[in-house]
Image 1 (cartoon, rainbow, N blue to C red):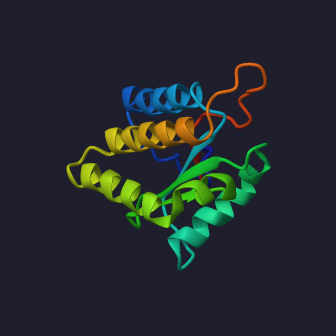
Image 2 (image 1 turned 135 degrees about the vertical axis):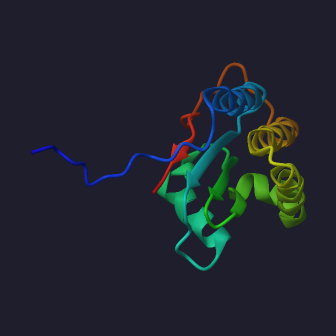
Length: 154
């Protein structure tokens, strides 16, 4: 008799090279700002609103606990083709809703060209530049408040 797992193998969305590209973008962005950027990817969003799901994940990951309230979550539901950016109150007050909408639109343009990893990396780089402008790196007090790895949900 064989042993069978009830749990399926986790989907792989990126090659190791693409994963490293995305993680490098996060690390490079965060070296220049006190802000934090996280990426959460799951296969499906079972809520009606993509932004509501992003907010739920944001708070579940305790991203509102950053000192300057300047964390940003990039949320993707792969099978449902949904993406959202959710910024904490510190950064959102600085940039407003149109900023997030423009970043999502630029990312989707690369997604449509079947370049998801570069779309994500470019978005992270742009957000990092904005965070650098609004919340510059503080050499004496800055610390990496949140992990840099991509978080995979269900």
